[in-house]
Each structure stands twice: as C-alpha cells, then as structure tokens.
Image (cartoon, rainbow, N blue to C red; front, side, top):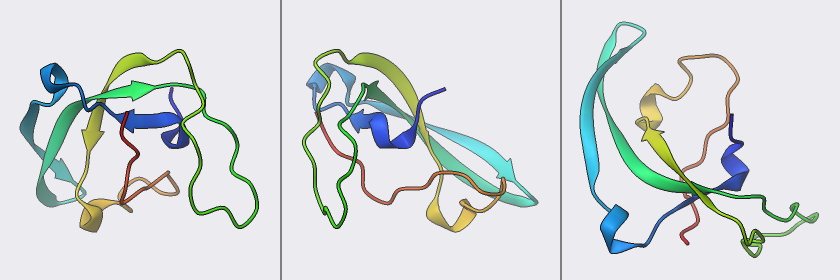
Length: 87
C-alpha cells in the first residue's frame, strides 16, 4: 500500500539488520532481503529532475522486501528501483 517513490531506507543503527528469505519467483529460486524502511509523503518529481528532497516530516516504519533485479519482471508491470534514498 506504499508507493516506491515514497520509501526510504533507514540509517538508524537499530534498524539496519535484515533477514534473508528463500523464495520462488516463477520457477526460479531466489533469496530476498527484508529490511526496515520508512514510508512518508515526498514532494513530486519535477521535469528533468535528477534528485529531490525527502519532503515528509511524518515517517512511519515499514518492512521492505527487496527482490533481486534479475527477478523483477515476475509480476507484470510493477515499480522498480535500483537505488533507494536514505533517511
């Protein structure tokens, strides 16, 4: 229920641990990572903008499941990002 554009990885040392979980995507076995993340409401991207400020003053903790890039297209058209901002 959170848009990928409104997600950031937490830099808080208490939240940096992650778990590795085996999964099967299609017929391919993969390993996913679950890590603490933050969800907020960011400012919209401007045309031709490479970076933007993380605009939310209200962040809530969420669990992020990170899937290997090679397995990304497993569920049709979905959001994907190679890089995530940090907070």
